[in-house]
Image 1 (cartoon, rainbow, N blue to C red):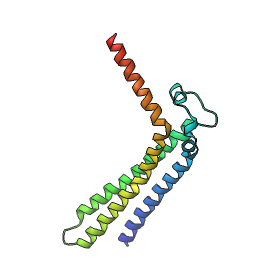
Image 2 (image 1 turned 180 degrees about the vertical axis):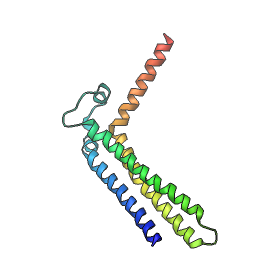
Image 3 (image 1 turned 60 degrees about the vertical axis):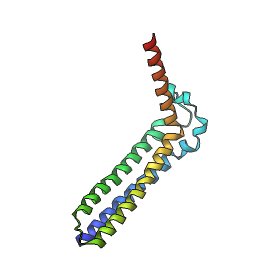
Image 4 (image 1 turned 60 degrees about the horizontal axis):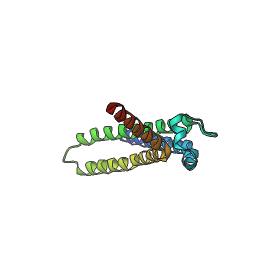
Length: 144
């Protein structure tokens, strides 16, 4: 019975984390599809663009992606602890648990991919541009 509880708990967490990824992807879909229309200056200067709410369309989905990644990491840490408890004599259980860990790592790549896709569709470009601008200003200030 304990084995069934462990498996059901792990599957429940996986389904919740995948659900969070789908919700965050849906929340950021409008921004990702229309990010070509938004200029970097709008991000840097903090201008509001008609039809976009940067907190709702960018920041909140990133937080949800991070929560999903954290849930997968929690499962991975717990599963690595369980893998260490298996003895060398139980090779089948060790193999199945290793396979499960590999599947979890592959599932972890889903929120990482979508999160980076959101970051690279404009927001990160604006942050990188701002950082480069500030570094250039700092260098010029020191040369003065």
